[in-house]
Length: 156
Image 1 (cartoon, rainbow, N blue to C red):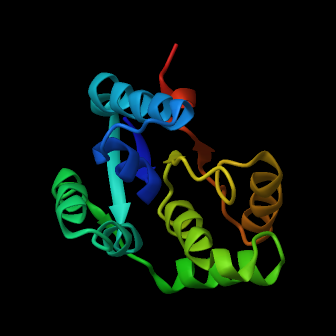
Image 2 (cartoon, rainbow, N blue to C red):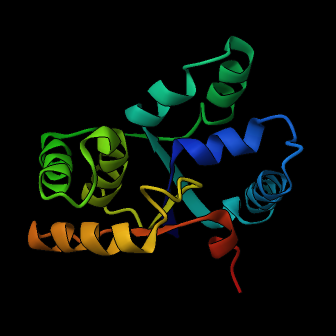
Image 3 (tube, helix red, strand yellow):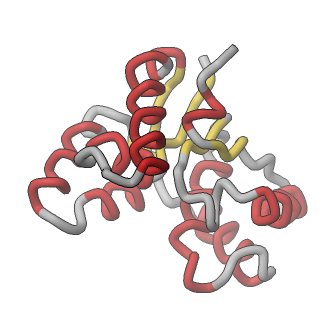
C-alpha cells in the first residue's frame, strides 16, 4: 500500500467551515472527496510538525483538526530530517521563512513517503519549488515524495 504524508493545509481544508470563496470551497470539496473516496487506499501519516500546527489557532477548530488525525502514525523529525531541511533552506531552494515547509518535505522524504498531500501551492505543491527541492534531496541521497494536491491523487 502506498504511503501519504498529510500536511497541515490538507487537514485544515478537511475540517474547516465551508468557504464563500468559490476556489477555496472547491478545494474543500476535493479534500473531502479524497478523504472519503481515496484515504483507505493509502497508509496515512503525519508528523509532530503537523500536530503542532493543527493544534494552533481557534480552540474549537484546533480540536477538530487534532481529532481527525489522532489515530495516524506520527513520523519523527530525526536528525537526518533536520539536516535535510537545513540543506533545503540553505541551498536557497526554499526561503528561510518557509523552514516549516522544508521540514514537512524533509520528514516525508527521510521516512520514504510516496506522496505529500497539501494545499500549500506557494512553497510545496509548486512546480518550480519542487524542482529545486528535488535536486537538493537527490544530492543528499534521497528521493523526494510526489508533492500534490488531493485533486491530483484522486486515482484513475
